[in-house]
Image (cartoon, rainbow over all chains, first blue to last red; front, side):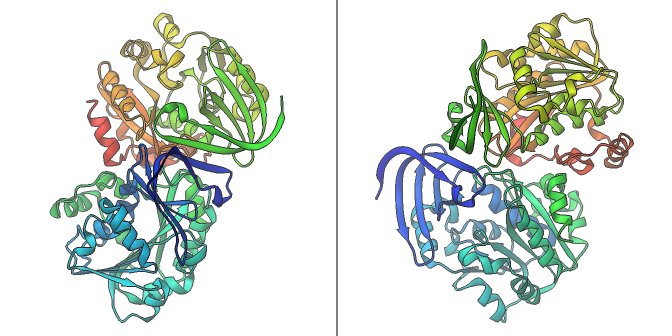
Length: 290
Length: 290
């Protein structure tokens, strides 16, 4: 452990898109083949600590705020009154940390791999930032799809913070799972999903919007640019039956953010709407799913 | 030439930000130490052809449309009636190609390195796409800063498509150069500049906005996400004395694009305004320059 390597680690080759991202590494902090995945935690030279699963970066301390803020605050502030929230996946605790910044009653987080949670607490404490100790946080170690099919709980917002659609994460991209989410949402509820980097995994966003559209009146997509998720914009899926949510005005979003003293480094009232402004190559992927 | 390598080439290490981008390469098409720079053209496996100068990707066939559309169409359609346009740099001809899609009288393109133009025509013909043969195109091989200080021409839009602010491109980031641009703009004219990838070259956008602000009433920044310019959003500088340009409505922008049958793959009327919605970490960089 903690081998000094002063070297470079390369990621994303496994995506098969002719691209790799290299980060300068000071040491390997932890490496383990878990029951589900091959997990490595690096101390990088300039990007903080990085956790990779099967050679794909899952979380990077320097830019994780982008992904976590955008998958959480967009649905939470569009809804405006979420009290019961569900996070599927999200083992590093970053999504939980952001969701807890809203005045919720309870956040149920369902993670399949308890070792990811424990390792994140140990090696990436700045990402969960104590979130698991919040009395409103309810951590369930279970298969997210099975949980959603069986639970008697109801939610105002469901956030799907999954890995890519291969291996254990694959079931979280199915129509059946989205249907179960829909059935567990309170009236006016909304769900958001991680849907891949659009230029290199473009079919993913189309498929997500299409499958969300089988269950929701308003199925759509929005975007954020996360440096260590190589390939330009990451896409997020959006599903709700409340067609007014996306029309919430900039001023109303700003007022809601101010009311809870929300300070962020990427998300803001301008970006809330701006994230739904889609480059043509992405808009085409979204429309293809409608 | 055309050595079969079936290998990977790595870029951006020279930026010193602990990050590299690797692209799978089928062959090196061309390599030359020019008077000004070390230039290599690769045939990549999945990203088309790529031209690199001093180990930094300058243009990549697969995603060049993003950079070229956004640095051109945002000022051109905000202005709405540009007849005389100047491009500083832009040797590959992509900026010229996009600017010629507007009803202009003349586009004066000032490139310091004629070998970049010739090599681009030979090896990257899809990027200039015949633009240099357009009778409205006026190619000047000269130092852009000296040209701007001396020319008697006047322009409605000036687009600065420079390399990074080191070596020959450095002078294109100075206040003196921006002042010369301002002096050569017709009333109501606008200039835009390449200002680096914000997360890894963040001081560049602040400095650009600050120096533009020494000459223009409205100095600001906007953004686009270009996958092979690693690090998230690229920043662009914006300078004009016409404070109404940024307020042009979405519908008016859409009408202007439709009137010239503008078809694009990234830029559209939503993204025109969306590009000025800045993530907080970028908004702070822009505000620091004001």
